[in-house]
Image 1 (cartoon, rainbow, N blue to C red):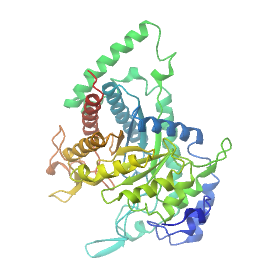
Image 2: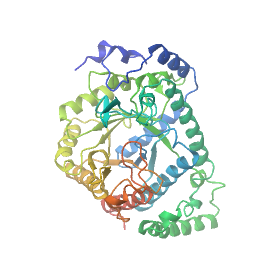
Image 3: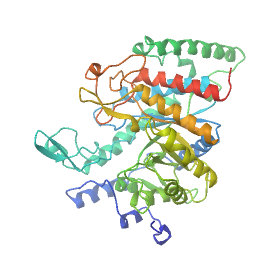
Image 4: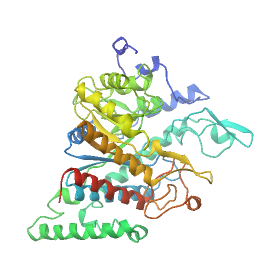
Length: 456
């Protein structure tokens, strides 16, 4: 393992270490000009907001709150519209309301949004009909169209990431702080195509109960005008810290604490392909004070995990480090308990959440990359079962979803079949749960939380 003490941390010290998933930029001078320009731009988020999220993640780690993290697998510039952003916020608000109402605990809402424009790839190239081109690495790097021009990495796209993220954040802040998240709108969040589903009807019944409670509060003088908690909510952003040049350019020294924060998002995580202990991504994240995450697969060994925790959270700070398990429904019940036990025995303070999507990706008979709703749910059930067996805290879920009525994942109450996938398959990369499937999953998770807390 690399001796991190021998590499004093600065925002640029990662450059002396091996880097995985770095695009082959054709013009380094062009890239450096763009990064210099980004370094002069205002931060997208602020250190105080990141500290607030750290405190929330600490509560989730203790079982006092539950994390709901969700959004696109890979955002695209074309789909980054006000309508799509609003719909993603809407489905996450719906899901968090279901979870809060059912489990009687606060929900920490984090979007895979306003920055999730880059994707790791297993291969540098892809071949179609005998033509080989660079792989699509997300709109932050190149274009989705399978043409030589589109697939050339373009540093100017990093400026597009910044400006699209800034625009989305402005809209998100206006929505969650300007009345859109007001609980009195709980019925209005139910769009027609969700309302007609079994889960939509179930949501309407729950919304009726919430409205009755709000009517009582209004009668005794508590309303949205005098209670901020009724009219607004906290919402945080996150993305995978993949392109370290971009992350470095958005890293700022906080004047109040003297700490460095990556101000591209409130929370950053490192993925399965970039979590090498002696490489650049882990080193970079070890030095920023944001809450951070690490994806943990069934290939992770207990000793490797403990080493990662020691590097990323040496002070054992609650809320600092979130471990995001992504193992697959068939593996989680065997692979997760030894990791939970090792972390527990070592007295390491972490927050555990599950990503039930990435380990359950399949190719359908018709050739689409997809997931089965039942597999996603089964991994969640296995996640809770593993924690119950070891006596640790299941702190939340991390999902790829959209607020749109797409047909990318099989099953659910809508009973989406293989032949339905082509109807509205719109993802640029991985399949997402649609709005109805996401809401259905929220009800199922709420039931699990309710049983665990013995809520009647």
